[in-house]
Length: 128
Image (cartoon, rainbow, N blue to C red; front, side, top):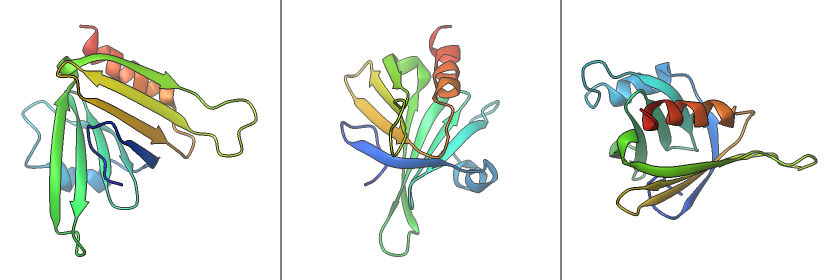
C-alpha cells in the first residue's frame, strides 16, 4: 500500500536515517526547510520536515517513477495519536490526521517509534 494522504491506513512504517531521504527531497525543500524524521514501508517513504509532511510513493516495477505529495502543518485541523496496549503481541503506534480540506491520513508505525515525539513535532508547528 502506498503512503498517501487519504483514508487508507499505511502499515509498518519503520524509522530510517535522514541520509536515506535527503537525495529524494533535495529538489523539493525550500530555503530553511530540513527533514526532521523519516519512515519507510517496503518501498514508500514518509518524511516529516520542519514545515510539512511529505509522502514519497515509489511506482512501477523499477521504482524510478515517484509521486511526491506534500501537506503543510498549517493545514492540519486536528490529529490524534494512539500508543500500543499493555500486552500486545505486535505493538504499534498510530497517527491520525485531519486536514482543513477534509483529507484524512492514518499512519501505523512499527519498530519502537516514539509516537509522542511525532505528536510534539506536529504540535510545535500547528500551535503557533
